[in-house]
Length: 549
Ligand code: F6P
Image (tube, rainbow, N blue to C red; front, side, top):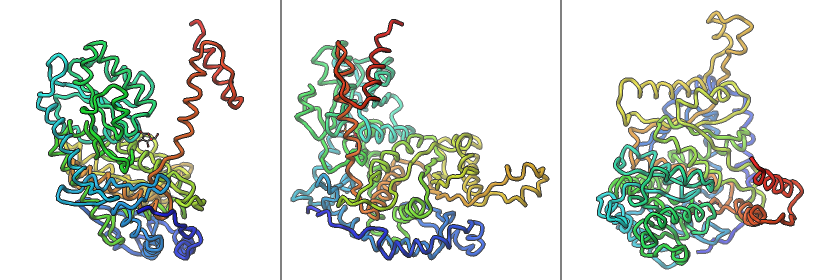
């Protein structure tokens, strides 16, 4: 099953790429106003729907021919073959020689997926059952702390994928959560994070979940040790068994840290950190919303998986969004991609996507180690609407940089209060309209605008958006949304020919920090052998820290 890192033809050398480059001038100077005038049916033809999620991609700077060429690119890069390889458990994570099998985490109990000789589905469900037992005990008050009291607060300690998924999902599904339980998420090595998270909690009624795939991440181990001291100082060493649960793939490291492996929930090497929110890393999510709703979340993931695997590319949401992303990033020169959920509960979704997209596809060489030859991951950022409108949207409307934006909205509010929701969605639709069509100087003049202000008030438009609309934010819907972006990342990685499942770029900084730490803590001035700037900064830090204040 090992995927040899076979060399794909360099992207730029393919006929499919060449055809796109030749088509670029046809589109580059055309305005969305012209594209709609030339083909008013695009409002119907350039939409797609899957799992109840509606995608309007008509306000993109592409025409039918451009779309056809992008779809041909997907064929040419064998995206279908690469989808198949991921879904059957081939070692698509070439540099770490293992599968990337997050799709197995949401397979139904009746399914089977044999990977490297083992059917992983029974394993997945054994872990889900174990999580459900813990979740029910906490939610039902039968899990007792060291003093016999029920658990009232859950603190998840983790970072990267072991934090962003849990915190995003908790915030997203807060309306479905047990409001009698308090949830806190601690990720940063900065002591402020854990100090603030625990300052008003009672150790006797707190459960700490240490979430770390490797159980060796500096920030998480530091926070876990601090939390352990907090519990032990208040309740004694024996309390650790009742107040700590570990989520990891390394039982030995969990035991060495001092958590009984009986209190560990496991997962597997084939789940990447940023693809793990629906594995045991989602324990805090399951405690918050309960096992039945967690099942709905998994069903949503699975429904989008099935769509990605089976829908023709011309109707395939992840493939269409991936292709449009490649079009802007590599042909139109866009460097960034905005994601603006018009849903307050999705406030952490852009941060979650930053890791998913940028850690996966922020690569410069192909799986075979050759330069990709084109730009890869965009810079991803975003804020919930309508807040973003009153800050950086100005630059989207009238700045000099092209930034395609995804706008995500729901037809039914979680809180149907007054006119709030219609105002929210009117704002979202208005932004898409204004970004696409703008206001011409003639329209501005027709308002009676003084000539000196016409240039300032002109809205150039021609700024692309995707609008994603669904009925309502539910656990199921969240699952479909996360899986949608997971597969956008996969399809783009497939086109670029890169390994979307490793993250070697984060290693060097970790190694250097380990070397610098003793130089900061040494009593005597340490000999320093870094570059002159780093040496000087270490000396400056030591001087400032030790200064009398
Ligand atoms: O440093 C990056 C990273 O490895 C991420 O990929 C991962 O999500 C995060 O650190 C946390 O890793 P772990 O779960 O092993 O603590």
